[in-house]
Length: 176
Image (cartoon, rainbow, N blue to C red; front, top):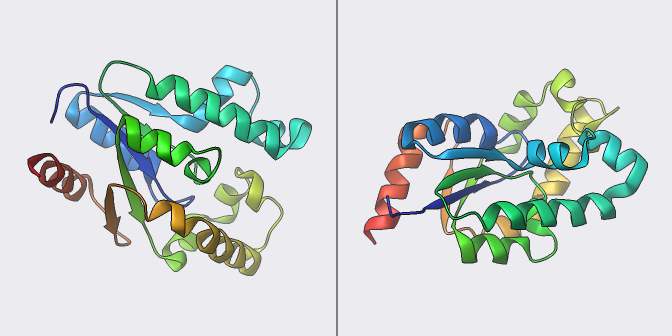
């Protein structure tokens, strides 16, 4: 890996950004940041409450500020973003200028299985929805966000992306 590498995972909710990110950061001996966790720390409030009390517009501006602060760090790190983060306020351009974006492309059926009812209720956009509604929401989000995700420097597709596969693709990227 290059000195001071910044790896940023993007993709749909449930694609494995946080799970894979934590494992890979540990393997690479990189700091790990979860953008949503950093937003919660910054605001002192859980994300669903931010959406409810201050609105999505406020949340997206806050998300951009926190993202920019992380991207400006000098050390190597791995960052897991929220699913919508690359799609607002020129965030993807910022991400691609400062680091290596990796799109974890997972099929909608697999995402739906991962977003069980309990998991879905933790995410503001899925709260109160039943399974068919979650499925439709996932499809709609993917349609809206795909154009942004496709601008990632590395794209990994599959329902069982492993850290080994991710490391292999990163090594290929750095060799080129």
